[in-house]
Length: 553
Image 1 (tube, rainbow, N blue to C red):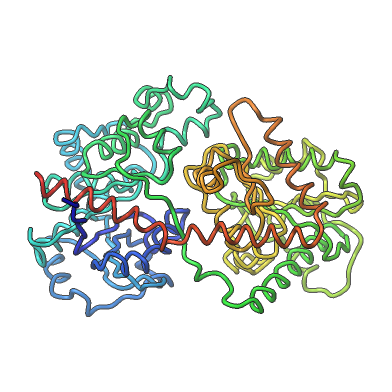
Image 2 (image 1 turned 45 degrees about the vertical axis):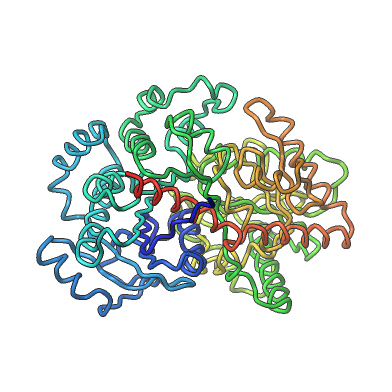
């Protein structure tokens, strides 16, 4: 007899990045909402931290009519402060923003119960652990209060916690209301990321790593403890790629029940070919203008524009290999005389936009004199210690007017208000010729997916979940002619991987217009296969697993 899939009536999706644009999880949640609502038919409620009580959050639109009777009871009876409204994204899902600060006086009691009930060790907590834990517990109490007011065991309810920062709440939900099905998704294990970020070889000795031992060595005991225990105790445990599933099995000692790969929606893409062409031209014009004013050059539209971006994780994101591949490109005789402009769009410890560059950008007259320190568009607080600027200097990337290859560090969030470009990341991305993401540690990889969506031929690695997924589509290592080149990368093939990335850039430079257009089209076709309409089924599977387990208890 064929099994009937269990669908939730209510979904509580909990994350620190609800209405709070920090990193990749924001993209996951904000792009999936519309499709998840449509496909599941459930009432979807996101729960996030209330971080902007004193000023307007453009991502959140408060609606005092939503669940108003319960909101009063939650405050008057349970002491829970919550603002209710809609997330300003496609689908306009319901959002509960939780004030978690009142729970700090209960911190020791909460940590004591967490140890007593779940053996979560909070003894070695520091930094953001306390903040995340108070939010996580507050979110669980909000869901518990809502359930007790409106719902009962006749409703199928899922509590979906994203990342270690929300794990504690999922455990308390499972304890207090076991009829709610708990799902936990880790988007990257805290220990795996830390091993990689501390320049340890994660892959060559992978089977020899013990998560608990490494947590002690790297001073990560509390984060690892809550992540591991949540993974082991929830009704359904998921992660975002096969490579991270292997990591979870080794370091968290539970193999994920499902792989909930990350999709996206095409809403942020230009709606027509005409609009696409307009934005493409505007992006190139702005990137070239900034570069020419910075360098004292007059490079034209035949310039090859290359970019990388993401979080400032120097090794994990492959920023070191990106610069190394540009050094190899500089030494390649086949591209002599070609103007190549490489942007590193990675938020750093930014101080302010350069006023000397701002002044030049407002003037129509050009100058052949480069600005001082022409490697960056913004001043940083730590100019002398910044790893990107240090490596650029050590490899001789001085961005002199006569140099064929210039590398520019853009150390700010490109939100349209940075003071130099004044365009968003997407509005600049569309103008690139190539995007390079030579990641060493990348559970999924939204940046290469976004680049391919904008029809920018992209290079990633097979240490990224996205890269492995692309290879699975092709059933072989994907090449640049396929739209996305997946470079083989290990702990011990630095030179070969760097050379492979350089060769991809040379391939683009030497290609004629027809081949380039085919690469662009192919990149867009790969991205289309990653739309949420194709991937949301993995979430449905996870919810079915969790609900089935609860119903069988």
